[in-house]
Length: 200
Ligand SMILES: Cc1cc2nc3c(=O)[nH]c(=O)nc-3n(C[C@H](O)[C@H](O)[C@H](O)COP(=O)(O)O)c2cc1C
Image (cartoon, rainbow, N blue to C red; front, side, top):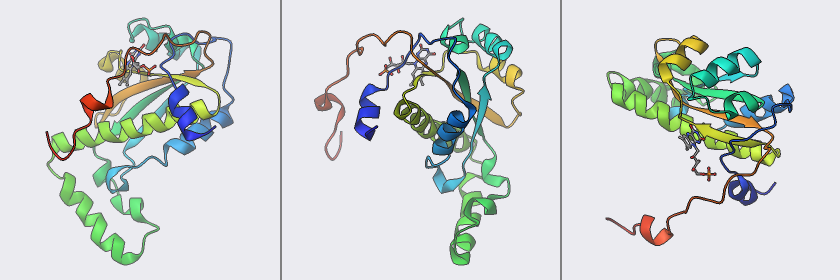
């Protein structure tokens, strides 16, 4: 599928076929695309929790305001981020780069994030946002549908997935086969309103 067709046809789908199972190798293909998403300093701070089993999905649904897509979609991806990825052996993020690049970049990562709690958190949200759109477009290109979600209680989802203390959950995405199309678009703002030339 052409990139623009994937962008234009991706919609937030709420009604999925509960009997459709995405083959594991196709989930892997979506995730292999996700890890090509950009991250600042290539810190790859996302962590993807893949949930396909019925019992866990039922628990997640209860923690997600009973939204049906959580149990009916074939897979739920909980997009988590490691707030401290920047200091966990950062040399591995540049292991294939020339030595001069490594010598410059690896200390720069530590310098950028050390003591910067808000920045670490912002980076987690940025990285997961980038990965989320890659996941949804990859799924669309494979003729699947998705729903990005923040309608859940993070503390409860954290318990269900046993989230490490130094991680957060920026969002979830459900993926499967749509049973019903999305409603017409809510109403996109015009470029006139949202595009600013030079300055506000
Ligand atoms: C960060 C984020 C969180 C969202 N959370 C939910 C959610 O919990 N439940 C839901 O049904 N839709 C959720 N949505 C879907 C939005 O309502 C939807 O993307 C928006 O209305 C635009 O529609 P479209 O994606 O079909 O273009 C979320 C979207 C985003 C980007």
